[in-house]
Image (cartoon, rainbow, N blue to C red; front, side, top):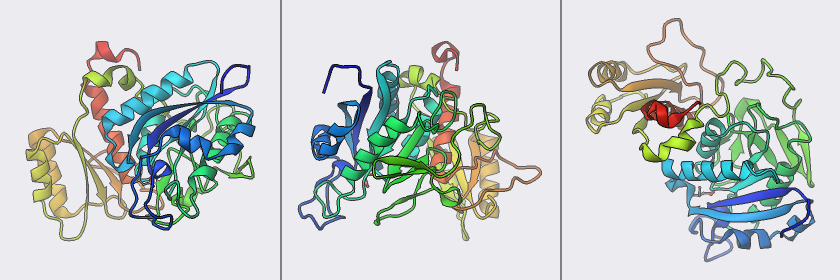
Amino acid sequence: MSGGAAPQLRILATGGTIAGQAASASDHVGYQAAVLPVQQLLDAVPALQQLPAQLHAEQILQKDSKDLDAGDWLRIAQATAAALAQPQVQGVVLTHGTDTLEETAWFLHRCLPAVGKPVVLVSAMRPAGALGADGPQNLFDACVLALSAVQIGLVRAGAGCQVLTVAAGRVFDALTVQKVQPYHVPAFSAGEAGPLAWVEQGQVRLARAPCSPGPGQDEPWAEGLWAPGHYQALLRAAAQTPPPAVAWLSSHAGFDARQVQALVAAGFEGLLVAGTGNATLHHALHTALCEAQREAGVAVAVTSRCNAGAVVPGPAPNWPLLPLPPAKARLELQLQLWLQRIPFSAAGSV
Ligand code: ASP
């Protein structure tokens, strides 16, 4: 589609089950993800042609999201930023695997400037030809969401909820979205926060009041915590600077401190530790972390391995608390250390 004054949506395809193919329509497990080209996914949804927008598609990756790495995140973020910078582009829809969607969403939230245009990550739990394939409906819903998010006040310049996800009709933001189901549809949840909105019958229904016109105290990014675009310097400079090695480990009964020693010996620069309960650590882990920090300068941050509620910070924490689910907390620590590695001249103003 081309020409005319209609708004444009950019569809950037990265792979995942939404582009997957199985030998049998009833096989939801033994299929190959990231096979079909993006044009084939769009052609399977004729209703997209009824939307008041031109769709421009580009295949930027073709991968199972379980295999993504930091270089892929950079590529996705740079392609998204380039699309958002074009005045005629109203929003970006990113097709993606479900497995690490929350990490890519977090990367984009923290690296893209909050220009007030929606970036919608869309995925599927069933390969394209499956009985009950969910990809076509999700793709349609993602385009509807990208076209309405500004109008209904869900996305606005400078606010934190520019990066959205939609699957099975439920809309989440980058902060709260988590894959919680290994097999069933729906697979995503925001836990106690619930969805931001639903897409129903081509309409977006808000679950609560949209972003306020000024920073609201109820927004976690209002005080600067989790601000959108905080690491945007990485988009300019990270390609020349390899990402630091950051591991994620959990505290558990019977913890063996050799895990920490092996990671330090292997050269890991950061350790994100998912503690028990209120981010508490097994005594052997605690001792090993103190040693790793003191003797090898390893950066340590903690979160909780509980996936509901919020850690209540204690009076004198040993290490910074990153109150995010472990996959996002590990990425956040990696982004912090990555930015520190970039020479100031290359990073420019953040
Ligand atoms: N392994 C697939 C992926 O994340 C799973 C999916 O998309 O549902 O790419």
